[in-house]
Structure formats: structure tokens, C-alpha cells
Image 1 (spheres, rainbow, N blue to C red):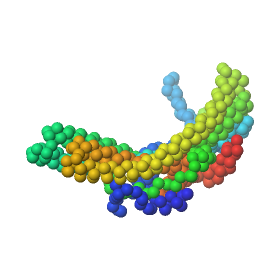
Image 2: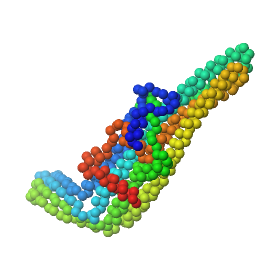
Image 3: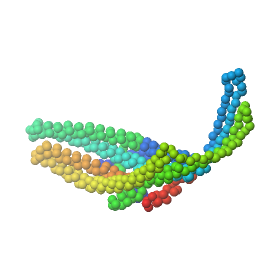
Image 4: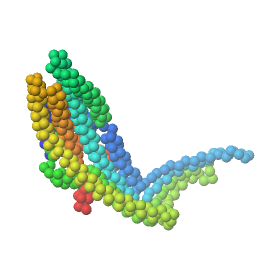
Length: 453
């Protein structure tokens, strides 16, 4: 599918001349690339993922030694003699020796959190790119509405002048002139409203893409969609990031529960300290070593509470997986139905425009021969305007619906669309923080395990 999409992104739309644009104009691919590179939501999500990478290092530090240095100095300031200053300097190294495996479980939970946040990043990427497609198509649609409204004002202005000329020679009544003037006033109002809606769409485009739209080119042929809604649903359930994110959260919750079950285990740590005092009774250097053990007996009910809380969190995580699966199934089927409806609307819209144009031409000719009234011409012109507007909306809806289906299948990503932009690689930061042991290597094994549940 991705090869087909790459070819589609490089071709023009085989659609109506309403969407004609110069070849050097901004393309949909250009807008998506800029969105991927600059959108603040993506920046925030990537930063959140980098924070999760640090969480793995923080969890690993529990199993690594810690070294601290301590220094102190004092001097007697009261009495017959102040005396010399005294002080000490020491360095202490400590190492956890045993905690029942709690720290190792904490590391695994942190790694699952990283995998979960990676799926959250993909979800954000999909939403942002879909917003960019929607904003792109909204600007093009509203621009066409403005052009239609401007043309309608010109046509009605000519009809008002013609009605006045015919009124002067007694061919029509004042009522005909007033009807034309009323339609012209409504058309002017519609033009101003269309311009306002275009400005709103342009500002939305700027917020999503990063700059103001300029000469937006006709979009490519919509992406290829599976032949049936069931095929799209099966693909969505198997790979949609919202489901995978929830599954990784279940794994993290299981690790947290296992860790909570160990909260009554003893902990043992060892330490080595080297120090020396200055101007004290004992100025010799000292080297000491020790082992410390602790066993929690009672913490006011917190030990049992932590276990129950972890169990509830795990149950919640499992329920979220089921919920996300239901949401995904409903969303992909709804998007698929909207896409099919928009395709049918284009077919009927083309026929409606053709028929309305013929009717308008015929009524206009009959009016010149005196067989039709001015109102008949105005109604036919309005029908033609409505038909053209509906067709413009149908083209916009088909594009947005197709990309929405793609998003609900989990495929609305820069890499799948082959945008030609360098994709953000989460392994780069993870490896820089935690070494080369990237979770990406085991990710697919984890997915297979999760999907077999």
C-alpha cells in the first residue's frame, strides 16, 4: 500500500476543474512535511518520550553504586580560648545488595512505559497529520466557496441591471426588479460570510501546518483503502497505536503489581567509607565497611494498600485495552461509511451540476422569450449554485474521509505516506541515555505476546 501512496502523492487529482492550481503551488505533501517538522503537539509528545527514556536510567540507578562526599568544619567561639578549627572529610560508597527483585521490576516497568509513550507519539503524529489534511482541504473548499459567491454576486448584479432595463421598457414589473435586488443582497451577505469562513480556515491551517496557506495545489488521488470495512477493521485492531499503547500499559501495570507484592521483602545494602579528621583527637584516616538490612513490619496499613492499588491499576489497564479496541472498531467502521458516502456524493454531485446547468441555461433562454419569470431564473441560478457548492464539499469530504480511514487503521504516519522527510527515530535518544540496549529490538516480540492473549 505504501508504494501506491507514494505514487499517489506525486500525481494530481483526477477531479473537477474547480480544483485546478498551478504546478508550483503548495502541495498536500508539502503541508504534511512542514506539519511533521514544526507542529508543537509533536514537539511536546517527543519531549515526553525523552522524559520516559530518562525514567529507565533512573530505575537502573537503584542497582548501581552511589558515591557521596561529606565535609564538615567547626571552631569553638566561646570560653577562655577559642582553640583551633577542626573538621573532617569522608567519602562513602554504597550498593544495594538485595531487595527481592523489586528494583529489576522497576526497570522493566520503566521500559514498558517507554514503549507505551512511543505508541502515544504515533497517535499524536496521526492526529496532527490528519488535522493538516483537514485544514488543507478546508482552505481549498472555502476558497472555492468565495469564488462561487463572487461569481454569484456578478451574475445577480447583471440580472438586476437587466431587470431594471426591462422594467424601463415595460417588459417586467417592479416586483421582478425587487426579487432580483433581494437575491443580490443575499448573495453579497453570503460572500462576506464565505470570506470570514475562509479566514477562519486559514488561521486553523496556520496553527496546524505552521504558516499561512499559499496557492494550495489540487490534492492527489485519495489513498488506497481496503475493499471492505471488515478488512480495514482487522488491520486497525492489529496495529492501531491507541490499542498497542494500552497493551504496553498493561505490561507496566503487571510489573508494578509484582513489585508491590515484594514490599514486605527485606533490603540489604553495603557501604564503604573512607574519612579523615583534622585538628581533632584522632587525625588518622579511617576506612570502614558495613552492611545494613531492613525489614518493613508495619507502615500504618500502607503495605496492603499499595498492593490493592496496584491490583486495581492492573484491572483498569486491562479494561482500557478492551475499551480502546471497541473505540477503534467503531471509529474505523464509521470512517469507512463516511468515505463511501462521500464517494457516492461526488458521483451524484457531478450529475446534479450537469442537470442544474442545463436547467439554468434553458430557463434563462425561456425568460428571454417571455415564457419564464425573473423569479424562475433566480431559482434556477440558486439551484446551480447549490449544486456546485455541494460538489465542492463532496470533493473535500472524500479526501478527509479517506485519510480518516487511514488514520483509524493506524497508517496515517510520515513513514507510511512516504513524505520524503527524515522520520523521528526514538532509538537515538534512548540509546544516548541508556546505551545501545534499545527496547525497539524486543518490541515486536512483546507485540506478538500481547496479541496472543
